[in-house]
Image 1: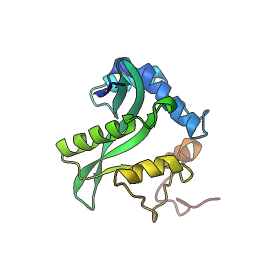
Image 2: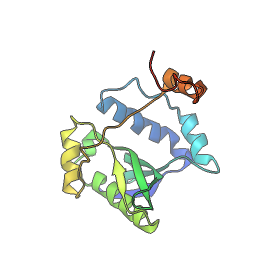
Image 3: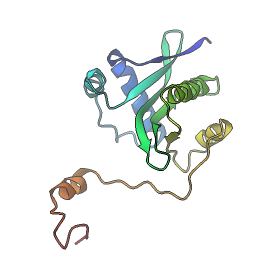
Image 4: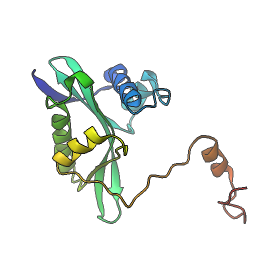
Length: 170
């Protein structure tokens, strides 16, 4: 197996979507994906793409991906890379593609002056956690991810922040 990693282009939108769907299925949320290849293609082709993506390949066959974006740590006063999605096709796991993707991300972080590479892992995903520990990563157990989306986000955006009821349920 000859592994390589390259930056994805808008022409890779279908492949990226295939990996996003594969990850959603692995994470037991197959119906959660709302993105389309057209969405991804347009976003990647925009003047300010909201994400970047790396593809791991065996020859010309894409076998994994890492989708990431730049973020910022106020405490460090430095930029960081946030790894949003990371996935290698099951039949290729354990052959070095994941390690190659992570190494490339570390190199990109270093080249861009990012002092941290960060991501989230589901509590039950022990294989991923073992892999991440093997590269020197560690969990931040004191933090819980919070989210507002959909109807709740719509309501929040329309709420008068000066209202005495702002931020309260009911």
